[in-house]
Length: 538
Picture 1 (cartoon, rainbow, N blue to C red):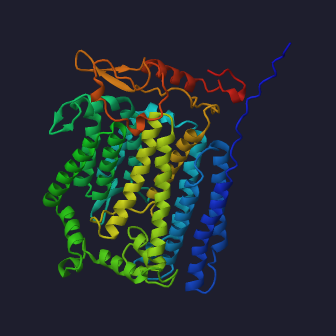
Picture 2: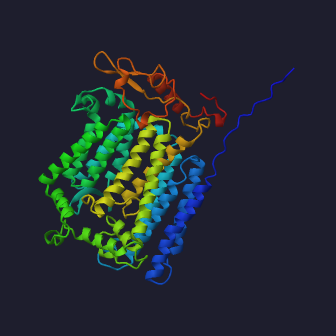
Picture 3: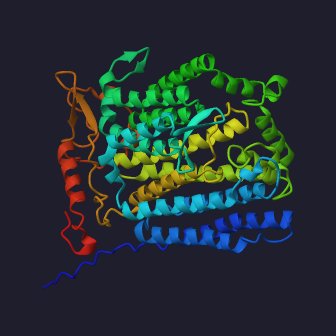
């Protein structure tokens, strides 16, 4: 006679996040160390505010780590230290420019920028504490589109918009300047992710072929064309080439990510190229940016008071003076660059940290982008894949546009370097991007048998339809009753597109789209049914 012994199911422990603690110590050492070296080099002593600013930065990192350990214990452990390092180095350079007493540098405000950084961190981690599942954002797909359109239209309102250096991309509220486009990119990323996760198969399969390019039907592309037209509106009426390029790049990248159609890249580059050439010919401010880019050392452009090449040339000279290893903190003359604390902080860092320091900064940015793209690949739901991929790409594109303009790879655009340049709007918006990436990475790395209160079970089938077949009226019909990956009715297997990032890692045997969405909604609406709280697991 045999008796069955009880079976004990092992439960994976929450990670201690020791790697993040170690990296945070290194990141704080880099940022605080730069701040100390500036004071010792210029004044021969530590700055008066050294200890409280260093303590405030360390306290911010500690609180962020605690929030992640409690609310997102499985999230990526590299993103936060990388952001803290970049933020610390940027604050050190802004303070170095502030105490230089050079003309034009009195606007540099290290204390104000630190306050903006702290506000951004507080908002980001408050959102991370409240938002337990990134898929909640999918319920606000079209609201996000309307919010994004409203944000980019605000600077055009008379009395609210403010024109600075020829670009009308700021609004002034209560004596504070705000750049709404920085937040619009987040709203558009949420909209694209929510819209494309539902319509990706329609955009990939339904529609005519023109010159070998697979084009979608106009009725399926309508909402996206509205956003594309808005990006051109930014270029034409707000005179901001950088923000327009940022929106359009996000638009094309997320379409390609959802459909895996290379025709989107060709079509997107063609449309933007035609629009940019037309704008350069029709609008003088755009043509001036191109002329300065092509002929920066021409006397007629160098001596121009507004829109000249003086800033660009001074940035080139500063980076050349820095050489391979730089002049050292506080030993260069970066204050000779106009707007060195915002638009050209990369060139200012190049003079004092050299090519080696600039390469390290770029690698740190690359690390953040790589972790974001890895999150997009590993997360289980299509909405999370598209949102993480879009946010990571828009950060990479912004870095390329800024660095490319300073190094004369492309024309100057006026965007700021994330986490380093002075600007409250940019700091706040990019901290929110980091919070969203950390939330999605927690969902991606969390074991499927460890659900979170208010979160859909990670092992549940993807609620979005996978394949689309042609209906009798030319419409589309979701097919999900068979195993995932089987051809849909009315669509030959040879015409199916390659699997995009948004379609990978989808478990076999996905239910019908409507039934899955209903199950997802039921789980969200009943957050108390959580095994960790002793409730019934659905």
